Length: 206
Image (cartoon, rainbow, N blue to C red):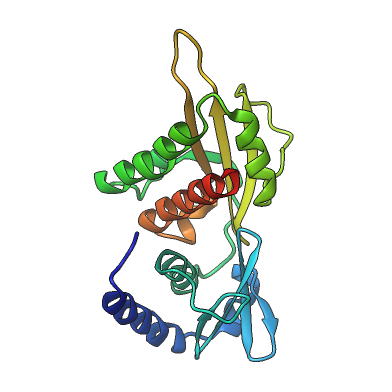
């Protein structure tokens, strides 16, 4: 989800304008925000991002990459009127709002294909990379070679599933999302969130 610098700035400013009209204090509990001085912190894959009328900043004071900015902005803008709690896991394609074929294709190419390409025959390396980026091994009775859970946002967790494959079936990797996720992010942003995880895992394994 790369963008030329000029377009990035236009979209970034548009998101800031929309965020400036939001009462972040009223969203604190619903979204799991953390108040710090005049800012609100949003944990995103274990890293805190500060949001205020002045912008979106990472923990070094820099503007994050475009995809991260979009996900964080959408998380605020799409805040539901109440907390939704449905922690059952669901495949991306099964979400009711995932009707656009481009979103499904993007999820397949930038999450599933990335995982298989990078970690086929290397599920131990994937486990190590997952641990390095904050993943945990949940108590889930799922028949995969590797199962790891990641906290993407306060109300959204992802479940990574990976099989090495054998002579009959090729390697396979995917990400499940909690059903409640669709109340907090739109399908495109959910797909970008899972792709972000896949990229971080690849980077951690290098």
